[in-house]
Image: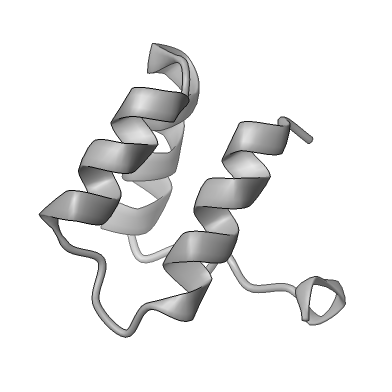
Length: 54
């Protein structure tokens, strides 16, 4: 997995609400395709939590 994506997922996982600051950070550190995919997953309410991610 992309290390930057992993860091963003961990950041999002810690939040109860993903605000503009978190999205701005994700957009800054991820490449455009990865950011778009993440955004689509979040917006379609696909859960990004796995038992092995704890």
